[in-house]
Length: 351
Image 1 (cartoon, rainbow, N blue to C red):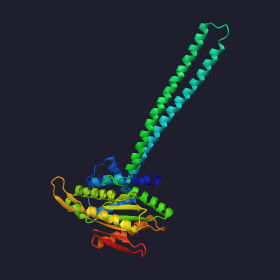
Image 2: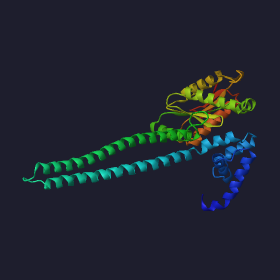
Image 3: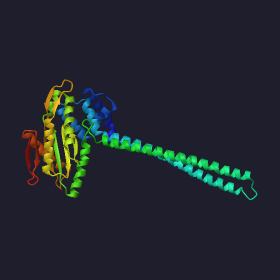
């Protein structure tokens, strides 16, 4: 915490605890981390999301806090894993260096033993003298072999340990970029991927499309059947996007009930066809309440598509896709609208 913020820390802490008490949220460290940052205003996106929930009278509860914790602070967990890995690796390296140093020392001792034994022998030496010299050399050699074997064994153990540490790092990296509810890419992964794929499209000249979509009337559905059923809907849509996207496409949960698919090397016509296939797949799936078998109806999606232009920033590409999505909503929902690449105006492909 910066020095100029120290005087406000007590105020932020008190406000965080008040908000947690007001919303019946347990004051455990992970929850406190979210509300302390909200009180401090240090994460504008976090505050914006919470404020929107409050403004629309949506529940600001433990479920939301845990979701915010996963999405906004996942990198902190990754940092912890990285630090732990670094510390363990340093320990392993220190142990290897110690054994190598001792092994080199034993090698020097072996050379000294051989020289000493050789100098003690002459043409007048008895068989007993020769036997003692050989025993001295053998003893020194065995010590050397033991240390070499220990070094080899430790190196093998270290190799196994490093493989495990690498797996843990990759897992932490993946978890930091995976949406905890749906299992697809989260907003952070989306932000990284869109920049990466735009740079690749500029370099290659290949087309790149962005599809953004959200679930029609999701709030009403959530309010009617509850958050657990709402989560079931989100998982259903995520599964349809992931399975419906082509190889090399990147499906992500953009936020709340909003989803996106980044489509490298894909023109508008192909993107429209894929988006409509996904939309039809979502519409065809009937939701059933697991506990009773009661039908909950069907879910539909609206989608907008933009085509990358070389001068685009990520924000402009997303904004045009959002504009198309907005038009799809106002045209009756359950449809795909894509911009016209030639006229830079949206055209509809209704469902």
